[in-house]
Image 1: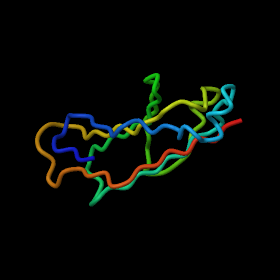
Image 2: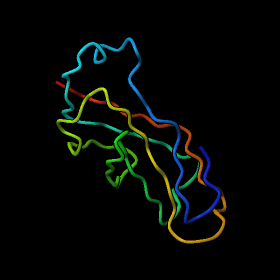
Image 3: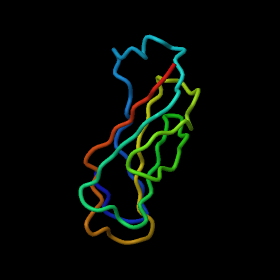
Length: 109
């Protein structure tokens, strides 16, 4: 995913459990914690904002390229998530923001 301009938000497709994942056989499974990580090609631009958002549009601002949260505790573990990226300000980003990897791991009970 590439972001060319400040003042805009962008995300990749929702990250969802595979259809054959064990959690999909357990409709009552609930989230305990979520771990995330992402990496950028190049340095982090000033004003970078990243959010972890669920398919129900509940979002949490992230303050690091990797970490863990309990903010989604109790929500269905079958939920989908996405990372949303933006850079404060206006004008073109030079170089553009390039997200080269992203991962979301849901721990559930």
